[in-house]
Image (tube, rainbow, N blue to C red; front, side, top):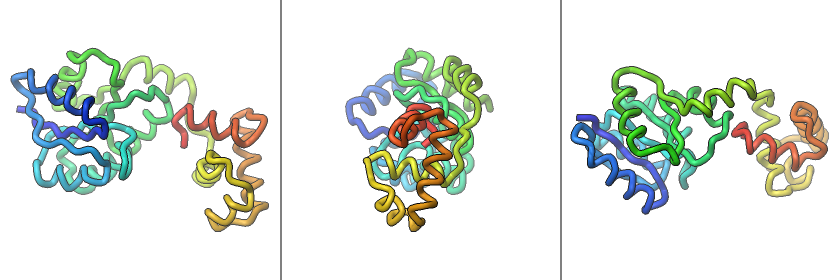
Length: 201
């Protein structure tokens, strides 16, 4: 029996996933949570074989939860489930220790099959997303450039970004300029949006 923890903030989606998986004779949903910061606690209590993690949830998303699970419960395999087919998310998921990355619009039969394959030691990745990740290459942004772009997304000024990140305004300008150049963007908002669309932030 494959024991599964479901982490999904939308109750209707979580319920549908639980119902679909419960139809499988070899799969049992042993825990359900709606927040990323409750995944580890629920996993330590329910001891699942697989944690099916939504990529965006309150309290930290699936990538953070996957990373935390790798430390807290190494026997639990993390599979990211998302509506966002962004290649950067796939790379970050694999770096976090996840062994699977699936899109929510995939057929239900594929989900059960993916869980079985993961239990047999395979990595399971949506094939179209894998091709996209290969064609787009690695994230060219440094950690600090990503931080500055994330801070720029809400439209903060250079001074506000500098204060938030404890940097000088000149340093903020330099990081934004470097990021814009790498992404071929005309301004910082375009750079931030491009990086977000690729899942690099």
